[in-house]
Image (tube, rainbow, N blue to C red; front, side, top):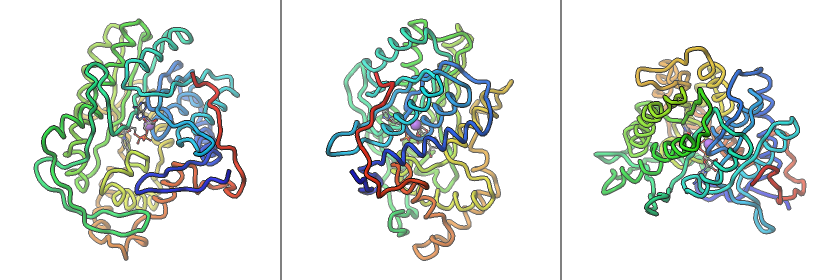
Length: 395
Ligand code: NAI
Ligand code: NA
Protein backbone atom coordinates (compact mmCIF):
# COMPACT_ATOMS: atom_id res chain seq x y z
CA UNK A 1 0.00 0.00 0.00
CA UNK A 2 0.89 3.67 -0.27
CA UNK A 3 1.01 4.96 3.29
CA UNK A 4 0.32 8.58 4.08
CA UNK A 5 0.34 10.43 7.38
CA UNK A 6 -3.06 10.73 9.06
CA UNK A 7 -2.82 13.05 12.01
CA UNK A 8 -5.25 13.69 14.78
CA UNK A 9 -4.08 16.43 17.13
CA UNK A 10 -0.65 15.54 18.43
CA UNK A 11 -0.75 11.95 17.27
CA UNK A 12 -0.33 10.36 13.89
CA UNK A 13 -2.44 7.28 13.21
CA UNK A 14 -0.25 5.81 10.50
CA UNK A 15 3.44 4.97 10.23
CA UNK A 16 5.73 4.27 7.31
CA UNK A 17 7.92 1.14 7.48
CA UNK A 18 10.61 2.43 5.10
CA UNK A 19 10.81 5.79 6.81
CA UNK A 20 11.12 4.17 10.23
CA UNK A 21 13.77 1.83 8.87
CA UNK A 22 15.72 4.75 7.41
CA UNK A 23 15.60 6.57 10.76
CA UNK A 24 17.00 3.52 12.52
CA UNK A 25 19.72 3.05 9.89
CA UNK A 26 20.74 6.70 10.26
CA UNK A 27 20.96 6.30 14.04
CA UNK A 28 23.05 3.15 13.69
CA UNK A 29 25.39 4.96 11.28
CA UNK A 30 25.73 7.85 13.71
CA UNK A 31 26.67 5.60 16.62
CA UNK A 32 29.20 3.70 14.52
CA UNK A 33 30.76 6.96 13.31
CA UNK A 34 31.51 7.93 16.92
CA UNK A 35 33.54 4.81 17.66
CA UNK A 36 33.39 2.07 20.26
CA UNK A 37 32.10 2.67 23.78
CA UNK A 38 33.37 0.42 26.57
CA UNK A 39 29.87 -0.20 27.93
CA UNK A 40 27.54 -2.94 29.12
CA UNK A 41 27.38 -6.19 27.17
CA UNK A 42 24.00 -7.62 28.18
CA UNK A 43 21.33 -4.98 28.24
CA UNK A 44 17.60 -4.89 28.92
CA UNK A 45 15.81 -1.82 27.55
CA UNK A 46 12.31 -1.16 28.88
CA UNK A 47 10.60 1.24 26.46
CA UNK A 48 12.95 0.21 23.67
CA UNK A 49 10.98 0.99 20.53
CA UNK A 50 11.01 4.79 20.16
CA UNK A 51 12.61 7.97 21.49
CA UNK A 52 15.35 7.77 24.10
CA UNK A 53 14.85 4.06 24.72
CA UNK A 54 15.38 3.14 21.07
CA UNK A 55 18.45 5.39 20.96
CA UNK A 56 19.75 3.62 24.09
CA UNK A 57 19.26 0.22 22.52
CA UNK A 58 21.01 1.29 19.32
CA UNK A 59 23.91 2.84 21.26
CA UNK A 60 24.30 -0.29 23.40
CA UNK A 61 24.27 -2.64 20.43
CA UNK A 62 26.20 -0.71 17.85
CA UNK A 63 28.43 1.26 20.23
CA UNK A 64 29.33 -1.52 22.67
CA UNK A 65 28.39 -4.71 20.81
CA UNK A 66 25.79 -5.52 23.46
CA UNK A 67 23.22 -8.28 23.39
CA UNK A 68 19.88 -6.50 23.90
CA UNK A 69 16.40 -7.46 24.97
CA UNK A 70 13.79 -4.80 24.23
CA UNK A 71 10.42 -4.47 25.93
CA UNK A 72 7.82 -2.16 24.41
CA UNK A 73 4.12 -1.75 23.72
CA UNK A 74 3.39 -1.42 20.01
CA UNK A 75 0.58 -2.21 17.62
CA UNK A 76 1.33 -4.89 15.02
CA UNK A 77 0.37 -4.27 11.39
CA UNK A 78 -2.77 -5.65 9.79
CA UNK A 79 -4.10 -5.80 6.25
CA UNK A 80 -6.07 -2.64 6.97
CA UNK A 81 -3.65 -0.62 9.03
CA UNK A 82 0.07 -0.09 9.26
CA UNK A 83 1.78 -0.89 12.58
CA UNK A 84 2.72 1.77 15.12
CA UNK A 85 6.17 3.28 14.48
CA UNK A 86 7.96 1.45 17.29
CA UNK A 87 7.03 -1.82 15.62
CA UNK A 88 8.80 -0.85 12.41
CA UNK A 89 11.72 0.67 14.33
CA UNK A 90 12.24 -2.56 16.23
CA UNK A 91 11.96 -4.68 13.10
CA UNK A 92 14.68 -2.59 11.44
CA UNK A 93 16.88 -2.59 14.53
CA UNK A 94 16.73 -6.34 15.07
CA UNK A 95 17.34 -7.09 11.41
CA UNK A 96 20.51 -4.96 11.46
CA UNK A 97 21.66 -6.33 14.82
CA UNK A 98 21.27 -9.91 13.62
CA UNK A 99 23.19 -9.11 10.44
CA UNK A 100 26.12 -8.11 12.63
CA UNK A 101 25.83 -11.22 14.75
CA UNK A 102 24.39 -9.40 17.75
CA UNK A 103 21.81 -11.04 19.99
CA UNK A 104 18.55 -9.04 19.85
CA UNK A 105 15.14 -10.23 21.02
CA UNK A 106 12.04 -8.44 22.15
CA UNK A 107 8.81 -8.68 24.05
CA UNK A 108 5.73 -6.70 23.09
CA UNK A 109 3.29 -6.04 25.92
CA UNK A 110 2.52 -4.07 29.05
CA UNK A 111 5.79 -3.61 30.95
CA UNK A 112 3.82 -2.68 34.07
CA UNK A 113 2.28 -6.15 34.27
CA UNK A 114 3.60 -9.18 36.16
CA UNK A 115 3.17 -11.36 33.05
CA UNK A 116 5.51 -9.31 30.88
CA UNK A 117 8.05 -9.03 33.68
CA UNK A 118 8.01 -12.81 34.17
CA UNK A 119 8.32 -13.43 30.44
CA UNK A 120 11.33 -11.11 30.32
CA UNK A 121 12.94 -12.75 33.35
CA UNK A 122 12.50 -16.17 31.77
CA UNK A 123 14.07 -14.98 28.53
CA UNK A 124 17.07 -13.53 30.35
CA UNK A 125 17.47 -16.76 32.33
CA UNK A 126 17.30 -18.91 29.21
CA UNK A 127 19.45 -16.82 26.88
CA UNK A 128 21.73 -14.44 28.77
CA UNK A 129 22.06 -15.81 32.28
CA UNK A 130 22.59 -12.40 33.82
CA UNK A 131 22.41 -8.82 32.61
CA UNK A 132 24.66 -5.88 33.45
CA UNK A 133 22.41 -2.97 32.49
CA UNK A 134 18.72 -2.02 32.56
CA UNK A 135 17.62 1.13 30.75
CA UNK A 136 14.22 2.27 31.94
CA UNK A 137 12.64 4.56 29.34
CA UNK A 138 8.89 4.16 29.57
CA UNK A 139 6.55 7.02 28.76
CA UNK A 140 2.92 6.13 29.22
CA UNK A 141 -0.29 7.96 30.07
CA UNK A 142 -1.71 5.01 32.03
CA UNK A 143 -0.61 2.18 34.31
CA UNK A 144 -2.56 -0.73 35.69
CA UNK A 145 -1.03 -1.64 39.02
CA UNK A 146 0.01 -5.31 38.91
CA UNK A 147 -0.92 -6.05 42.53
CA UNK A 148 -4.18 -4.14 42.95
CA UNK A 149 -5.48 -3.94 39.37
CA UNK A 150 -6.12 -0.21 39.86
CA UNK A 151 -5.73 1.71 36.61
CA UNK A 152 -3.97 5.05 37.12
CA UNK A 153 -4.05 7.89 34.59
CA UNK A 154 -1.39 10.57 34.59
CA UNK A 155 -2.26 14.21 33.99
CA UNK A 156 -0.22 17.21 32.89
CA UNK A 157 -1.37 19.95 35.23
CA UNK A 158 0.14 22.73 37.31
CA UNK A 159 -0.04 22.46 41.10
CA UNK A 160 -1.51 25.16 43.33
CA UNK A 161 -2.72 27.62 40.72
CA UNK A 162 -3.94 27.96 37.18
CA UNK A 163 -1.25 28.05 34.50
CA UNK A 164 -1.60 30.64 31.75
CA UNK A 165 0.89 31.08 28.98
CA UNK A 166 1.45 30.78 25.26
CA UNK A 167 1.34 27.58 23.31
CA UNK A 168 1.49 26.64 19.64
CA UNK A 169 -0.40 24.24 17.46
CA UNK A 170 2.57 23.07 15.43
CA UNK A 171 0.40 21.83 12.57
CA UNK A 172 -1.03 25.29 11.90
CA UNK A 173 1.64 27.48 13.50
CA UNK A 174 -1.04 29.28 15.47
CA UNK A 175 0.19 30.72 18.76
CA UNK A 176 -2.52 31.14 21.34
CA UNK A 177 -2.97 31.44 25.06
CA UNK A 178 -3.60 28.31 27.01
CA UNK A 179 -5.01 28.10 30.47
CA UNK A 180 -4.68 24.90 32.46
CA UNK A 181 -6.58 24.31 35.67
CA UNK A 182 -4.52 23.11 38.64
CA UNK A 183 -4.35 19.51 39.78
CA UNK A 184 -7.08 18.38 42.13
CA UNK A 185 -8.16 15.25 43.94
CA UNK A 186 -5.84 12.33 43.23
CA UNK A 187 -4.17 13.93 40.18
CA UNK A 188 -0.73 14.09 41.77
CA UNK A 189 -0.66 10.58 43.20
CA UNK A 190 -2.11 9.14 40.00
CA UNK A 191 0.61 10.78 37.92
CA UNK A 192 3.30 9.60 40.33
CA UNK A 193 1.85 6.08 40.15
CA UNK A 194 2.25 6.07 36.36
CA UNK A 195 5.47 8.01 35.73
CA UNK A 196 7.25 7.76 39.10
CA UNK A 197 9.77 5.13 40.12
CA UNK A 198 7.63 2.33 41.58
CA UNK A 199 7.60 0.19 38.45
CA UNK A 200 11.32 0.75 37.83
CA UNK A 201 12.05 -0.59 41.33
CA UNK A 202 9.70 -3.55 40.80
CA UNK A 203 11.67 -4.56 37.72
CA UNK A 204 15.03 -4.32 39.46
CA UNK A 205 13.79 -6.10 42.61
CA UNK A 206 12.40 -9.00 40.62
CA UNK A 207 15.54 -9.32 38.51
CA UNK A 208 17.69 -9.25 41.63
CA UNK A 209 15.53 -11.74 43.49
CA UNK A 210 16.05 -14.26 40.71
CA UNK A 211 19.81 -13.67 40.65
CA UNK A 212 19.78 -12.15 37.17
CA UNK A 213 21.93 -9.09 37.91
CA UNK A 214 25.64 -9.38 37.19
CA UNK A 215 28.25 -7.92 39.52
CA UNK A 216 28.70 -4.21 38.87
CA UNK A 217 25.19 -3.99 37.44
CA UNK A 218 23.93 -0.53 36.45
CA UNK A 219 20.47 0.82 35.75
CA UNK A 220 19.43 4.20 34.37
CA UNK A 221 16.14 6.06 33.94
CA UNK A 222 15.46 9.37 32.21
CA UNK A 223 14.22 12.61 33.67
CA UNK A 224 13.65 16.20 32.63
CA UNK A 225 13.99 19.58 34.32
CA UNK A 226 13.75 22.41 31.77
CA UNK A 227 13.60 26.18 32.19
CA UNK A 228 11.45 28.46 34.34
CA UNK A 229 9.26 29.09 31.27
CA UNK A 230 7.79 25.60 31.47
CA UNK A 231 8.31 25.02 35.17
CA UNK A 232 4.73 25.55 36.34
CA UNK A 233 3.37 22.96 33.96
CA UNK A 234 6.35 20.61 33.88
CA UNK A 235 8.85 20.36 36.72
CA UNK A 236 6.62 21.97 39.35
CA UNK A 237 3.51 20.34 37.95
CA UNK A 238 2.12 16.83 38.33
CA UNK A 239 4.67 15.27 35.94
CA UNK A 240 7.46 16.96 37.92
CA UNK A 241 6.23 15.22 41.07
CA UNK A 242 6.53 11.93 39.21
CA UNK A 243 10.07 12.85 38.15
CA UNK A 244 10.93 13.78 41.77
CA UNK A 245 9.75 10.32 42.74
CA UNK A 246 11.70 8.66 39.94
CA UNK A 247 14.86 10.51 40.97
CA UNK A 248 14.40 9.57 44.63
CA UNK A 249 13.87 5.94 43.60
CA UNK A 250 17.37 5.86 42.10
CA UNK A 251 18.75 6.14 45.65
CA UNK A 252 16.46 3.40 46.96
CA UNK A 253 17.46 1.11 44.12
CA UNK A 254 21.17 1.89 44.61
CA UNK A 255 20.82 0.84 48.25
CA UNK A 256 19.31 -2.49 47.34
CA UNK A 257 21.98 -3.04 44.68
CA UNK A 258 24.86 -2.94 47.16
CA UNK A 259 24.93 -6.74 47.23
CA UNK A 260 25.93 -6.83 43.55
CA UNK A 261 28.06 -3.69 43.78
CA UNK A 262 25.51 -2.02 41.53
CA UNK A 263 24.21 1.48 40.99
CA UNK A 264 21.08 3.24 39.77
CA UNK A 265 21.31 6.52 37.89
CA UNK A 266 18.92 9.10 36.59
CA UNK A 267 19.99 11.13 33.60
CA UNK A 268 18.38 14.47 32.92
CA UNK A 269 17.96 14.69 29.17
CA UNK A 270 17.24 17.47 26.70
CA UNK A 271 13.74 18.43 25.56
CA UNK A 272 13.09 16.67 22.27
CA UNK A 273 10.24 15.95 19.94
CA UNK A 274 8.91 12.48 20.79
CA UNK A 275 5.43 11.04 20.96
CA UNK A 276 5.50 11.67 24.70
CA UNK A 277 6.57 15.33 24.58
CA UNK A 278 4.24 16.38 21.74
CA UNK A 279 1.35 15.75 24.10
CA UNK A 280 2.50 18.25 26.72
CA UNK A 281 1.04 21.76 26.38
CA UNK A 282 3.52 24.65 26.00
CA UNK A 283 6.46 22.27 25.41
CA UNK A 284 6.13 22.35 21.58
CA UNK A 285 6.47 26.18 21.57
CA UNK A 286 9.47 25.96 23.87
CA UNK A 287 11.05 23.23 21.74
CA UNK A 288 10.55 25.14 18.50
CA UNK A 289 12.39 28.16 19.99
CA UNK A 290 15.02 25.98 21.63
CA UNK A 291 15.75 24.13 18.38
CA UNK A 292 16.20 27.43 16.54
CA UNK A 293 18.68 28.73 19.11
CA UNK A 294 20.60 25.46 19.50
CA UNK A 295 20.84 24.94 15.76
CA UNK A 296 22.15 28.49 15.30
CA UNK A 297 24.79 27.80 17.92
CA UNK A 298 25.66 24.44 16.36
CA UNK A 299 24.76 22.47 19.51
CA UNK A 300 21.45 20.89 18.56
CA UNK A 301 21.09 17.19 19.32
CA UNK A 302 18.43 14.55 18.74
CA UNK A 303 17.81 11.40 20.81
CA UNK A 304 20.72 9.49 19.33
CA UNK A 305 23.24 12.30 19.80
CA UNK A 306 22.06 12.74 23.39
CA UNK A 307 22.31 9.07 24.31
CA UNK A 308 25.59 8.50 22.47
CA UNK A 309 27.10 11.42 24.41
CA UNK A 310 25.49 10.22 27.64
CA UNK A 311 27.10 6.81 27.31
CA UNK A 312 30.47 7.97 26.01
CA UNK A 313 31.07 11.05 28.16
CA UNK A 314 29.08 10.37 31.33
CA UNK A 315 28.06 6.80 32.03
CA UNK A 316 31.08 4.84 30.87
CA UNK A 317 33.87 7.03 32.19
CA UNK A 318 35.92 6.39 35.33
CA UNK A 319 33.95 8.70 37.62
CA UNK A 320 30.48 9.48 36.32
CA UNK A 321 29.90 13.19 36.92
CA UNK A 322 26.62 14.12 38.64
CA UNK A 323 24.98 17.25 40.03
CA UNK A 324 24.35 17.90 43.76
CA UNK A 325 21.27 15.72 43.59
CA UNK A 326 23.22 12.82 42.15
CA UNK A 327 21.77 13.18 38.66
CA UNK A 328 23.69 12.86 35.42
CA UNK A 329 23.19 16.00 33.33
CA UNK A 330 23.11 15.68 29.57
CA UNK A 331 20.77 18.64 29.32
CA UNK A 332 23.84 20.83 29.88
CA UNK A 333 23.74 22.46 26.44
CA UNK A 334 19.98 23.09 26.61
CA UNK A 335 20.37 24.73 30.01
CA UNK A 336 23.37 26.89 29.04
CA UNK A 337 22.81 30.48 30.13
CA UNK A 338 23.22 31.98 26.66
CA UNK A 339 20.77 29.45 25.22
CA UNK A 340 18.11 30.05 27.85
CA UNK A 341 18.51 33.84 27.76
CA UNK A 342 17.92 33.82 24.00
CA UNK A 343 14.93 31.46 24.26
CA UNK A 344 13.34 33.76 26.87
CA UNK A 345 13.73 36.78 24.60
CA UNK A 346 12.19 34.93 21.69
CA UNK A 347 9.39 33.59 23.90
CA UNK A 348 8.29 37.16 24.67
CA UNK A 349 8.21 37.94 20.94
CA UNK A 350 6.47 34.77 19.80
CA UNK A 351 3.18 35.21 17.93
CA UNK A 352 1.58 33.36 15.02
CA UNK A 353 3.15 36.03 12.77
CA UNK A 354 6.69 35.98 14.18
CA UNK A 355 7.11 32.30 15.00
CA UNK A 356 7.92 31.03 11.48
CA UNK A 357 10.87 33.45 11.53
CA UNK A 358 12.07 33.29 15.15
CA UNK A 359 11.26 29.66 15.87
CA UNK A 360 12.07 26.37 14.20
CA UNK A 361 8.50 25.29 13.50
CA UNK A 362 9.65 23.53 10.35
CA UNK A 363 12.19 21.54 12.34
CA UNK A 364 9.56 20.67 14.91
CA UNK A 365 7.10 19.53 12.30
CA UNK A 366 9.71 17.53 10.42
CA UNK A 367 10.82 15.80 13.62
CA UNK A 368 7.21 15.06 14.48
CA UNK A 369 6.50 13.43 11.13
CA UNK A 370 9.86 11.65 11.25
CA UNK A 371 8.71 9.91 14.46
CA UNK A 372 6.19 8.08 12.29
CA UNK A 373 8.56 7.52 9.38
CA UNK A 374 7.23 10.39 7.27
CA UNK A 375 9.13 13.26 5.61
CA UNK A 376 12.34 11.27 6.05
CA UNK A 377 15.03 12.27 3.56
CA UNK A 378 15.86 9.60 1.02
CA UNK A 379 12.55 7.70 1.24
CA UNK A 380 10.31 7.35 -1.80
CA UNK A 381 6.77 7.79 -0.52
CA UNK A 382 5.18 7.08 -3.90
CA UNK A 383 6.51 3.55 -3.76
CA UNK A 384 4.13 0.75 -2.84
CA UNK A 385 5.29 -0.74 0.47
CA UNK A 386 4.34 -3.86 2.34
CA UNK A 387 2.93 -2.78 5.70
CA UNK A 388 3.21 -6.32 7.06
CA UNK A 389 6.69 -6.41 8.54
CA UNK A 390 7.90 -9.04 10.99
CA UNK A 391 10.11 -8.37 13.97
CA UNK A 392 12.77 -11.07 13.73
CA UNK A 393 13.50 -11.43 17.46
CA UNK A 394 9.94 -10.99 18.77
CA UNK A 395 9.08 -13.65 21.34
P1 NAI B 1 8.54 7.67 23.73
O1 NAI B 1 7.08 7.87 23.70
O2 NAI B 1 9.31 7.91 22.49
O3 NAI B 1 8.91 6.19 24.23
C1 NAI B 1 8.12 5.48 25.14
C2 NAI B 1 8.48 4.01 25.11
O4 NAI B 1 7.73 3.35 26.14
C3 NAI B 1 8.11 3.28 23.81
O5 NAI B 1 9.08 2.30 23.54
C4 NAI B 1 6.78 2.59 24.16
O6 NAI B 1 6.50 1.43 23.39
C5 NAI B 1 7.05 2.23 25.60
N1 NAI B 1 5.84 2.00 26.40
C6 NAI B 1 4.86 2.88 26.73
N2 NAI B 1 3.95 2.29 27.53
C7 NAI B 1 4.37 1.01 27.70
C8 NAI B 1 3.88 -0.10 28.44
N3 NAI B 1 2.77 -0.03 29.16
N4 NAI B 1 4.57 -1.26 28.37
C9 NAI B 1 5.71 -1.37 27.64
N5 NAI B 1 6.23 -0.35 26.95
C10 NAI B 1 5.57 0.82 26.98
O7 NAI B 1 9.06 8.59 24.93
P2 NAI B 1 10.45 9.28 25.28
O8 NAI B 1 10.28 10.74 25.08
O9 NAI B 1 11.59 8.58 24.68
O10 NAI B 1 10.44 9.09 26.86
C11 NAI B 1 11.24 8.15 27.53
C12 NAI B 1 11.65 8.74 28.88
O11 NAI B 1 12.47 9.88 28.66
C13 NAI B 1 10.47 9.21 29.73
O12 NAI B 1 10.72 8.92 31.07
C14 NAI B 1 10.49 10.72 29.50
O13 NAI B 1 9.90 11.44 30.56
C15 NAI B 1 11.98 10.95 29.44
N6 NAI B 1 12.40 12.23 28.86
C16 NAI B 1 11.83 12.70 27.70
C17 NAI B 1 12.19 13.94 27.20
C18 NAI B 1 11.59 14.48 25.94
O14 NAI B 1 11.71 15.68 25.69
N7 NAI B 1 11.01 13.67 25.10
C19 NAI B 1 13.20 14.79 27.88
C20 NAI B 1 13.79 14.16 29.04
C21 NAI B 1 13.37 12.94 29.52
NA1 NA C 1 11.80 5.56 24.97
